[in-house]
Amino acid sequence: MEKVIGIDLGTTNSCVAIVENGTPVVIPNRGGYKTTPSMVAVTEAGKRLVGHIAKRQAITNAENTVYAAKRLIGRKWNSPQVKNAVATSSYRIVEGPHNDVRIVLRDKEYSVPEISAMVLQEMKVIAEDYLGEPVSKAVVTVPAYFNDNQRQATKDAGEIAGLEVIRIINEPTAAALSYGFGRNIEKTVAVYDFGGGTFDISILEIGAHGVFKVIATAGDTFLGGEDIDARIIDWLVQGFKEEHGIDLRQDRMALQRLKDAAEKAKCELSGVRETEVNLPFIISSGRNEALHLQRTLTRETLEELSDDLTERTVDICRQTLEDARLGKDEIEEVILVGGMTRMPKIQTAVATFFAKEPNKGVHPDEVVALGAAIQGAALVDDKQEMVLLDVTPHALGIMTFGSYFEELIPQNTTVPTHRTKIFTTSRDNQTAVKILVMQGESQRAEENELLGEFILTGLRRAPKGQVEIEVTFEINADGIVSVKAKDLETGLEQSIQVTATSGLTRDEIKQMVEDAKDDLLDRRTSEEFEGARQEAEKLIAEIQKLFPQVEQIVATSDFGRDAIEKAKSIVDKANQAIEKREASLVKEQIEGLTRTHRMFKGVVAKT
Image 1 (cartoon, rainbow, N blue to C red):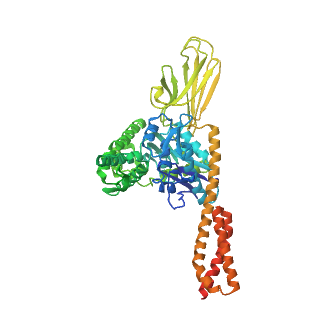
Image 2: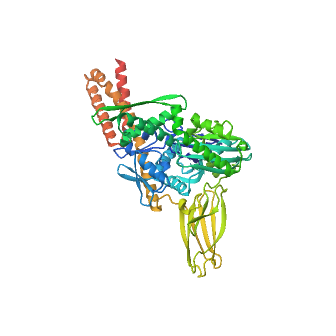
Image 3: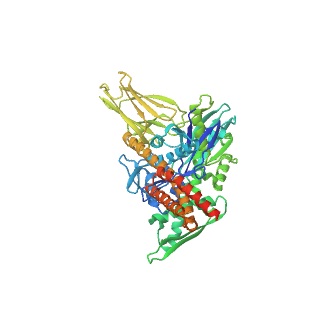
């Protein structure tokens, strides 16, 4: 059976899992970690770094290291969230050619799906190394409250990474799949998912026969641990400014150090009552004197700084319960997902709101990837008895006369689904009508997200209100929207598949797929070279250490002198092969180096 991996493409960290012999397992990366930082960097030499290696050099290469790209994926340049990121990020964000967002690394512009593709490609490589075979299919998770453009951009990122994304699945739903998998339970559960960049709440009914039905979902795609980090940074920057009159935000390296320190302090305060933030030589004053930052942050201060953010998650939970028409007492289990749910204040807030202790039995960082892997296995295995009924997180409709939003498919409608409504023309002798397809909750069309548009032409001339147009919306299991408009009298029809827009054209995506393939080839080659280089250099060092002793012992005989010259030649050839950076050449020299090393050790041992 074909292997399908499950990927949790997170704001802060990403995770990949697979179902093996009926059991979902998280695949560790080369360093043995179950999660990989969702960070990408480009070095001065133009080398691409992803994950832990990118995070380790973030402070010294702040301007060319991207974090939290997920918060920008599928967003328009003029959105408030992008403006916020432009003002607070240590890397450069610019406007793309399609009113989209681009990130500048070493003077080259990258689209956000390209950056996310680098992280997905890393997940693909981790899985392939573990399985020992190529992987081409994946289920990728997204926040439940992502709109169509954000979902499409995530799918594009998968394509650029060389993966066929066979399903996009909501993160809280994936967590519920993992929680209920193989347990044969019947429960109404709430999944409270507070991660690095996004917040979601989903209420589901889990049936005994593998039926997972989402009743309601809501969230905020710009509310997460990053915002709590930002509050700590503000607190540190303000304190430093009051003491020294210097704004640390003006220095990119200082800002990256503050970001690292804020995240570390936040994590530590989940286990201790206070922690010290100590950043020596954070910046130089005008008089060239090195300044240090040293402050003690207590858990109480952190809770005060982030209190309104915690409260926002509770308000969203309250609204979602109303949407689901359920009382708190009808929720049998509250499942905590996402790194932020380790924070004691958040656990208390959830317990107080739902009037019950939340379930901490799932791993907050791994459960989403495990759920994605379970869904992936179910999609390719006919024997899997699992039914997943998800909902559309946003209402869908069209713009009508007077810039109003006319809803056709309400928020929290189970997908797949289709709905039809009849509209009439708004002007006399109108021969064409423009259909603007929108997604959102506002009655004002301009406050919602435009997904696509098309024109139905060739309408018969008639007084306004006399031409009837039937509009049909359809959403498939992937959440892809199709819209059809039909003149009821003539049968004239026009349709559009709203595959949304990630801000990239098909040609751009094709080019990015090719670039990513080349990069993967380079990476695999360089990994192979690195392994061979390390082995060769270790042998060379051992041989050179033994040279003086061996020369002393065998220099008196012609045979000995020949052996020494031959050994020097082997070492020289190996060094030349390393300089050429060709793995095959280095590997060829390893055998000769091994023989020489063995011979030298033998000579020394005999004396």
